[in-house]
Image (spheres, rainbow, N blue to C red):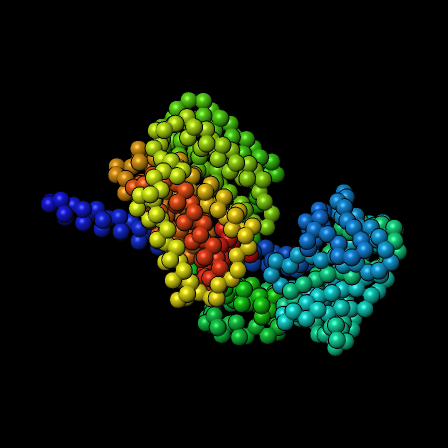
Length: 495
């Protein structure tokens, strides 16, 4: 075959593999979201069948409260089995509880407070309805140390203008407004929302699956007539569309349970024993130490270094609560990569700055005007970028590109049969570091293909890192909402 035909065949092969990777990332993201929705719905279904509260908070640390503190004349500190609350003045103070999505106070109007101690206080309840209007109930006595059940249906809540408030199907905020004499101390153990009817729960899954209506029709039917209605989503939907429909359902009625039609609700399997995460982390770090004692094959070194980051991100360990074993594994992987890069010396053949006066040095910046153009065409008006966030993102981009281009690419070049496949391999790794954000994974694959191709010509890392940071900030300031759900990765993408 003539050389021109060979080059064309190679380019076609690379293009085909890129297209397959784009489709694979869309599928992977959708599957992970579908499983997440199924587990979330299964967990709720199981709790309702067992008569457990629909929503509950078990405050143990300051971070279990909104902003990690008391609003007003009070303070909190961790205590065995709860949070110790101390009133520091006669004026009321508020305790806010994080609301991941929304709360249905129509079907779950019983507020249960469990506490420990012997103190007398008064407590009112504050919530915000779907329009953001804050409503406050009259204060009532709270004899701490005994369970208190507050039926919100029997309290005349009013908004700041004194207008009466109805209980909402989708409340966005829940706070306790507490008043007690200065120096009063007690321990809050549980706050829960329960139903007065133990029969409240989701309908039969089998019956709902017979002839599921279109998603818009199902959403329009969410009128509160059923406490926990199912919303069945199509099997071919993207990750972003699945979560958008779930969010729409919850905005209409917080008790709605959205699942994909081919992945029915199922409670998550029981997790591994409590210390298994730390045991796996210790084994992984010990393996890294052993591998770092002498030179290893590039493939084994690469696999060992990326196991930690992929455990944290692709393993969905970065969510509302941090999985510290995975974070430690991530840190150990970075140290391992740094040690191996130091060992390799100049063999990796790149520099941070390099020849800045060469045209190839500036090539990575070509994606910035492209990002601006996409934002102008399909995004929203530019949102201001905080200088602190920009600075942090520059550092994060430099770390990512060092790990990908400074560490991974030279080793892939030694393993892969041709440099173009090493470039594709780095782009795939970059995309996997943004799991399960499907659209962002696809954008990252294409962007890193370009940046890695620029890098192999200049071997200068700084321009790629700066172009990465600038492009990402522009994308975040213009495309979040209409094009991208968010820039979040790992389990934070589900929020």
